[in-house]
Image 1: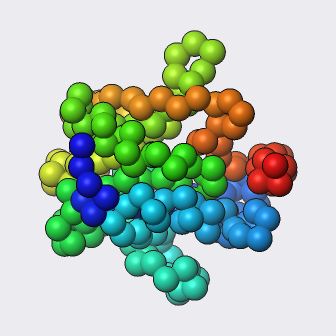
Image 2: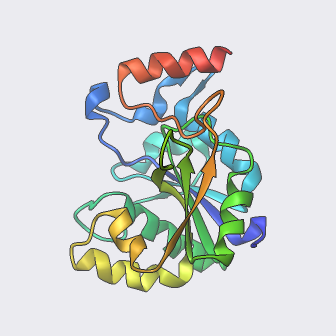
Length: 204
């Protein structure tokens, strides 16, 4: 198990939100906060520092008071490039791991970092999962990533690898599974209907 200060929390906010009409999905309102502010509130107590992964003008996130990281590899090849940017920052700060989560998952569990770090005794990469009726449902962008693999990830991205599961599977992955009753802690907002459900959940 690793300590809080060993982890950089990375919020992935680079999605194009096409099903929500475009724009920064994390800026959508959820009660008195926004989706991304809800994620910040959930992650901040669990990690040593936070950063946001997003391309484009970083000034649009200035009010959040977080470093905004552009992808380390050109071409915006999905969340892996954001995770690599987080690894590069974590390395500069002397942290050993990056804990990633999406900007549209406002109900993250308070024990996310702790339970993911427990899994490091079994595999170098630990991913979150929701308990399903059969197999657990893997959440590939919510995970704990060792900074020691950053050059391997950089090489993979330069080779054209873009799928999180494909790259992570090369190194070994273990799942940390959370119950979904009463609420799936990894519920994510992809559509207007999802946003309505999230607002209902937030109201209790």
